[in-house]
Image (cartoon, rainbow, N blue to C red; front, top):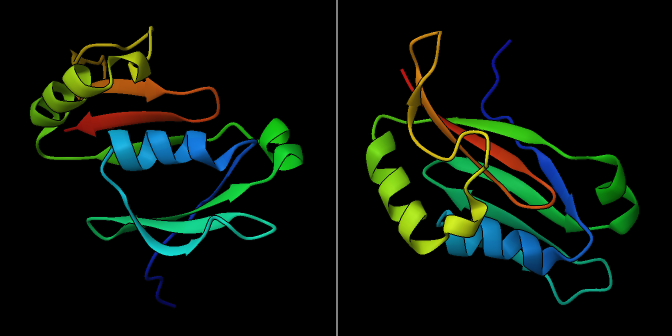
Length: 120
């Protein structure tokens, strides 16, 4: 048995909020675009990662996902995001911090999603 990808679905009341977070702040690109359709959705991609972004207020109210992105250049990512989109820095982990389990981490959040960046 072989797995190739794990592709999460992320729901927003307004898909534009997700686009600001993932495209403008984190640098994902839109690989498939149905944002103007009756049921807006798109596929976001970056560095081999992929996710489906949906506008669906009922499911957005039920789901507040948390993701962990492992990287080898956490300081560079933090520097870029803290300058360009400081409003997304999570108040509980707003700086690169060595955690008790020895990984470096910082976190971002908007009103729907939390993303923890981690470097071992």
